[in-house]
Image (cartoon, rainbow, N blue to C red; front, side, top):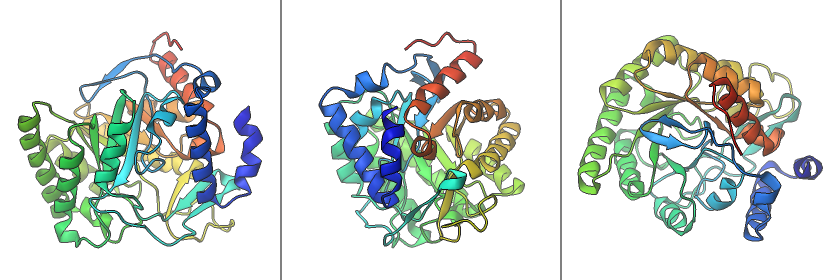
Length: 346
């Protein structure tokens, strides 16, 4: 109700400014102790994925809280898990604004943020200062000026920095907004990267006495042979999950609309079918060997159910929160719990 009243004002602002203002408001409501009354108790429908216990199957996708600055506030929305980042070893400003655009008629966004973040050490400090004790994913990437041949070095730096507090680590090789990043999904490059990160994880597991799951996040624009290769390499290197998907370079469904010609990745409702196609293909290829975390176009409970029906174990939200409301979290969590035969409580 409150969000429906605020949305016209927020949508009158530049999209990135509205994003910052919304998070600031959520922080304030949390600090004042009213957020838990506004959003209620989270849906309790536990499930186990990647060896982790999730309170419910609905998570926050990476990108909304890049620096882990709003974890406590975001946890009041009822998520079963939160993923922060993408974070890089060194701070970087990202691409020049404006870099976030709405396509309101189609409930979509285009972003070309470019991994803007304060660096992994700042994220680590923010996480350690938070009170959140739930499942926390950290999404890691490479700095824009790190040569693609040296990308593994950046992922290793980030993995080491977040290992002691991350519930799982997501390897982002699919953002369209860092030059050449998606080439890491290709044959030899993918094999080198995943083998290197997995090898470092094993060393860290011995040192910390704790094995942190690894997930790899892929693009929705891959063809079937490429998806097959990702699945094979992930299994060969003991990766624990695949996140499907990131944003798309396609403009199918938004052609001719205002902002549709902006460069960057498209998210929201037009991505739902394309992303679900990748989930279904992965499910067939993996045959239960690895769980799938579905992201991309979840705008209502029916969309979340479609992802799980296609083979996903967990779902993530981002753009849907902007066009619908934070109530989307509990709606999706209730629907998934009921469909699984659980008796959700909140």
